[in-house]
Length: 85
Image (tube, rainbow, N blue to C red):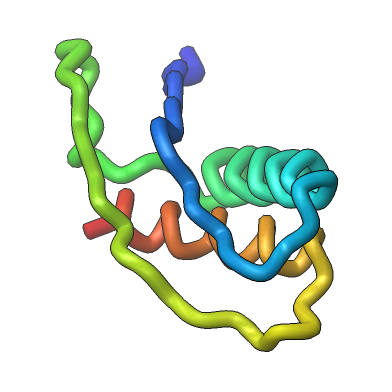
């Protein structure tokens, strides 16, 4: 039976993007996280006991001309890497 994961991102601060880009970034993040979790699975760190896990993924830099879709994918990959730790 597939496991269910509810992921809430309380705050994501991105500097240097137009306010309207937030939707494209969010959609790309969601697509990439769904892809990563469905193809590579979820870390055993996330048990079935319903525990809430908090993460602080820190920060990273991107090229100033990065497209919103690219930013979303890279943010999702950073979140996934942190989930695997």
